[in-house]
Length: 283
Image 1 (tube, rainbow, N blue to C red):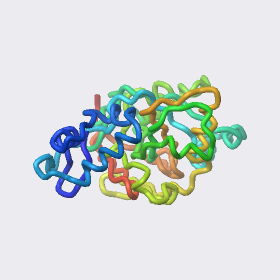
Image 2: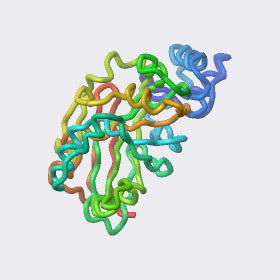
Image 3: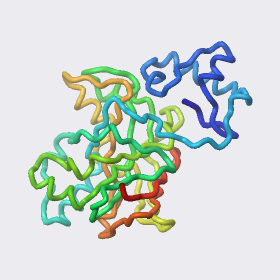
């Protein structure tokens, strides 16, 4: 676990031990430790002992095996357009309640690594999303208190194989096999205190250097706070859970009638968070 600082990445465990401020060695442990430990980490980061800064390291996913991953439908324009393209209309339920599906939390890919798609894939696709990470566990969380339960934000790529996703969804039980092989997460977690307004961030997707998608987090119909308030009623959230936003309008190849090919490089960027770039390969 490290912190992005000038010159590279600060090894927080080593720096904390050097300064007499012990810190957890993993992101999940840090999140579970709570606000007092987060403040201690900030003190260590402010000190930035040069001997504990690693220049130019390869970054892994900030949470390589999250305790839970759900993808919510918070950008409803994407749903409306996507369904229209296959001759369907969006159910009014999407505007009456926050809807999600349980996503694959076992195959998480960080920045600058190859993402293996099934060899028989016929429609390779990305989805330009972002996500929040739950910091404080809880249940029956009010809308007003929901932000206090968010640890931070990251970029999320909901990789999709449309050739199997659409036939699978005809059973009305979600995307299933069309998603269960890869999710992209990174390049880091930006804590809430680092972003003035999380709902005013520019989002872009480039494929092989060409701009394919552009949008803003401000176009969300629902916000993360709505999802937390609604789905904590008589249910609990755990520290370290990831809540995906769903896809911004025109944030995937399907909406654009375009398909990725093996070897393509997909670069997702969100203002204030960073860049998540991956190359698509055959498994």
